[in-house]
Length: 223
Image (cartoon, rainbow, N blue to C red; front, top):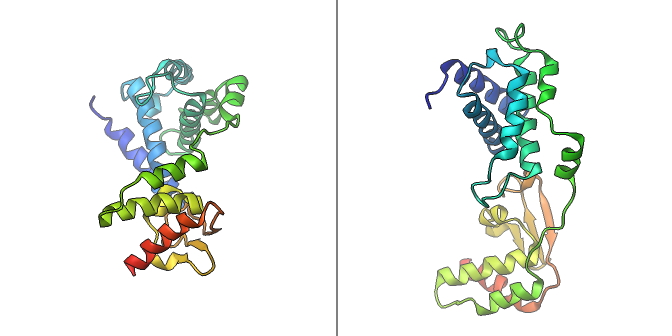
């Protein structure tokens, strides 16, 4: 489907606003871009200046009927909420831009909203299933360690259980962030890719001296 040049230019200005004025990360801006693109695909790249509330209403029904590419199931309420929230923010910004002020009202953005019931469902907290400590320990015990790469993989799983660090944080760690004497991991946000760019200091969890030994051996090997 051919893109709309006018739409692309105003989107570029909006993404710059999000990044420079609202200080959002590249990942957050990409999420907003995906939501807007999904709406544009629904309207067949129609000019944003020609927006009508019926488009928002129809898009909500369209979104509810779509299937997730990953699971093949209908999109979750949380995904729908995040998509509509991104579009609502875009329309509020657009209503203040030259060439759009006389065509879009601030109240039009409210049509990109789920029902109160669906919003409550989307925001409901849920327990996230994950492996037990014993299951992770079983995996570590079964992992090979004959090569350097195998040792690294085993140490990463051990570090994940010892510290609770996110995978992207683990992938960006440096040796200086590991304090074995204090049994701590210093996730320095200036270097480590932590969530919301926050510095996090984690004391090793008491999950077993054998796991700490694996982590210690890998740090010693690297040094």
